[in-house]
Image (cartoon, rainbow, N blue to C red; front, side, top):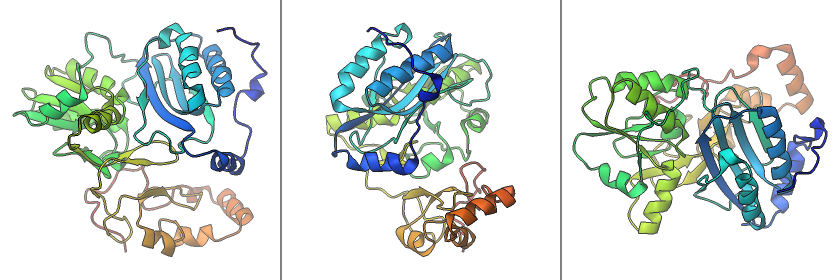
Amino acid sequence: MAMAKLPKKEFLHNRLSREELLRRVAEEPPGMRTTLSFYRYTRLENLPELRDKLYQEWASLAVRGRIYLAPEGINAQLSVPNTNLENFRCALEQHPPFRGLRFNPGLEEHSPSFLKLTIKIKRYLVNDGLGDFFPEENLVAPHLPPLEFHQALDEPDTVVVDMRNFYESEVGRFDNAICPEVATFREELPAVLELLADKKDKKILLYCTGGIRCEKAGAYLKKHGFERVFQLEGGIINYVHAVRRAGIPSRFRGKNFVFDERLGERVTDDILARCHICGQPTDRQTNCANEACHALMVQCEDCAARLNNCCCEECRQVSLLPAAERRALRRADPSLKNKAWFSKRIRPRSERSQILQ
């Protein structure tokens, strides 16, 4: 594919307001886009140049999404107009490190997911705290196709581990999975090592949303002496597609948390979580409407209406102020930021069923 001259740097990022982005999404016909994700651990060089090339190519195809590039590879979640899907695939194939990538279509492929295109350069694809630890081929845990993983769930001496954060497993998970009470992947790796300390003779099944965290986790466990470690190929997303095609009941119940505007994709009708405010069963996740807080929470519709989509009365009062006053308040007292009682950035209480009144 011939490459046009790169535009000036200042044009290689979104320049529209959130309001304008929302308006454009609302004006698009339903079902005109497909949401998909992919990743690959591979050695990359000249990241600034690569980032700019990808941004130019993908912006011209009206791609939206959040993409991370790092010396260890690529991690992408994005949405593409259906008419540009083949052109997008061809553009990706022009870059040797990304040839033959397997796309993971979203479970709700055609629902609005991203507002803009963001491509960032990171030191690591996932903040795992392992430094320059790379999942070399000899350490990577074998990938189990979804239906094999489904069958393995019932095998004796099998341990299933959720490699996601607590706010993800809270609304959806596999039956009988170990779900560490951690807020970050960086905390999860040592926590899982401790939880599995007496299970080195067991068959360990790992799963996450799309597979990228399990690549590191599987290699990490194998490096620490676990020999029977396997990972779900393509993660939860690939599993749900597979069991639906096969017409068999999903062993993953509830919602699959996703890191975009939707926050979740419905897998089964099971409601596994409770409102953090009143304790009623719900798996509706949202962010506090007070911009200085923005805490991620599980909140029922009744509490959302009563608190004006905020996590507490204090935040509700702030959210009712004019925008200029809210900005002035944040500038005057930076400590207000993230002051809410619940946030994905802090460790959860050991018993989340104890609801604040």
